[in-house]
Image 1 (cartoon, rainbow, N blue to C red):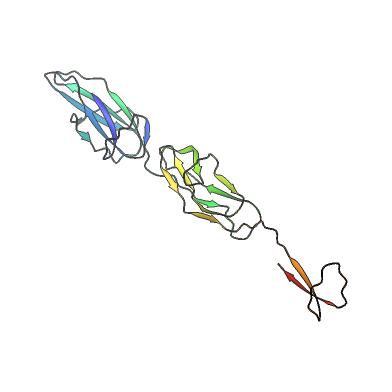
Image 2 (image 1 turned 30 degrees about the horizontal axis):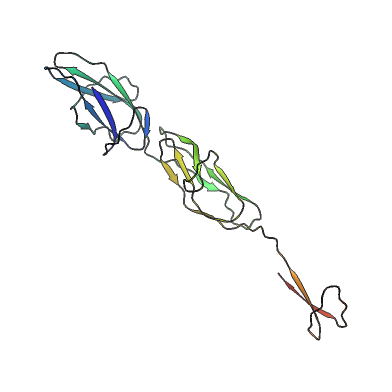
Length: 219
C-alpha cells in the first residue's frame, strides 16, 4: 500500500516530515492485490504507536484528518482477504498554518532627534506546536531581504517601512507600515544684516560707519 499526503483541497503533495502551511488529506492505494482482495487500514496519533483499524478506500482521498495541526503520525497497513498483513508504514505530518506574532515594534521617535533611529521587533514567537521562527526570521523591506537580527538602524527619515516575521513553515506576519519622520541632522544657520540707522544702507562686517546701526537676524 502507498499513501500520498496533499494539502487540503489540492493535489499538492507534501513529503513526510515536511512542514506544511495547510492541513493535510491522505490518499491510500493498494497494489498487487490478489484474488482475495485487500483492505486498507489507517490510524493517527502523536506517539507513532497506534494500530491501524480505520478502513480507507483505495484511491479515495481521506478528508477526516484535514483539521489537524502541529505534529502527528498517520500509520497504515493493508490486509488481504487471505489473511496476509503488510508491515505498518508511518507518515510524519507537520502542520503549521498560523503566522508568528510579535508584541510590538519600538524605537520610532515621537520627538525630534539628531541621532540615528533603531527599530526593534519585540516578542516575536511562533504558535505552540508550530514550526518555530526561521533562523533569518526578520525583514524590514517587505520581504525583499531577510536577517537574523530583530533590529535595523536608519540614519534619517524613512517612509513606508514594512516589517515581516516568518516561521520555518513559511507563514509570515506583516506589521503595519512605519514612517520615521522625526530625524533632523541639519545644523541650523543664521545670518546677520547691519544697516545704517537713518540711511538704511547695508554696512559690511568690519567696515566703519558714520551712523549707528540696526541689526536683523535671519535663520
